[in-house]
Amino acid sequence: MRWQVFAAGFRPAFLAAGLAAFVLIPIWAAIYVYGLTLPCPWPPTLWHAHEMMFGFIGAAIAGFLLTAVPNWTGQRGVAGAPLAVLLAVWFAARVAVATASWWPAGVVAALDLAFFPLLAAFIAPPLLRAGNRNWPLPLVLVALTICDAVFHVEILRHDAAAATRAILVAIDLVLLLVTIIGGRIVPAFTSGALRGEGVTMRTFPGVGPAAIVAMAAVVLVDAIAPGGRVAGATAAVAALIQAVRLAQWRSGRTLSKPLVWVLHLGYAWIPLGLALKCAALLGGYAIAAFWLHALTVGALATMILGVITRAALGHSGRPLELDPRTVVAYVLLLLAGLVRVFGFALLGLAYPIVILVAAFLWTSAFALFLWVYAPILVSPRADGRPG
Figure 1 (cartoon, rainbow, N blue to C red):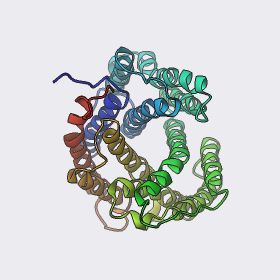
Figure 2 (figure 1 turned 135 degrees about the vertical axis):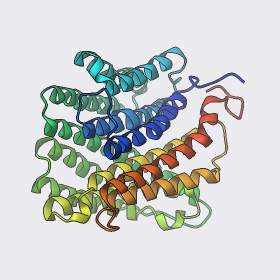
Figure 3 (figure 1 turned 90 degrees about the vertical axis):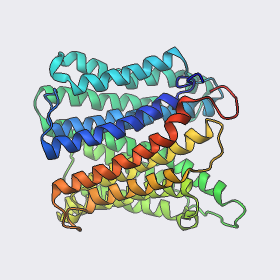
Figure 4 (figure 1 turned 180 degrees about the vertical axis):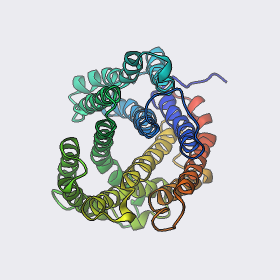
């Protein structure tokens, strides 16, 4: 059987995202708990944050956009050698960052900063030619590149606080992207799944745009004045609007449909994470201390796992029917998020134990993903069509 890994954008990108998730978190747990060292001069927490954002999440964003843009525009997607180059850049950046002590800082930064602009160069022309409403998406990639560039500059200046701010703004930008795109696909997939059951979704006018504006405000405030009362109040408003938005989507009716409820679960972490952010910044509540992990492990990772499992099935010509191992992966990732966010304050676990248990649950989830989906991602479409 001939491998088809570069026949369509979702294949290598989703495989890269799954591998990054499977590899990076155990390394981080070993660094934090057992003192493992990498040949990287960055503070370990910043290496971890950067690689989860620009490694794991970056690959997932690429896979989604390289799959969605051809659907939106009706034009042929990136495949073959250009796709291989894009993924080679991503992989080279991961190696360069992990071994940054061995290379000039400019080489590491150049490799790391090349990925999103190259992705933007692939998706911008078809979006612009088609006059598609999603034409601003390459600008999000530019903004993420700016965040990454600021991160590298602040690392050179040994300003950990400023580097952390750059990562936070990048995470906020991805949450804004989830708010925009997720706000379309979650209700659309829900309506499709519930069709024939007599269930209708009534949407309140203006809630969707208000959620987008609120998340844009979160981005702006965290870029200018993170960690203060204004950031906490902004998070509170955004949490309320996002909760109202989610309440429209009839989440309770999707419990028998894992391909749908996983998306609701991922989106539900957004208002929860924002509410925890408000509680931490305005009240200093210990239970809310790990609000950022509610937004990353909870919202972003769950949405990523839900989207890539669904997209990999649909775009490989397979029916949208989940292997039971995938459902177990969804549950394990949920447990990883709950332990990471609440294990210290609610369960009374020692913090190293929280790291180890959450890492085990996370890694098990993505091991199951790779077990089920790696063969799908590298093999030809089940229906014999190209792609």
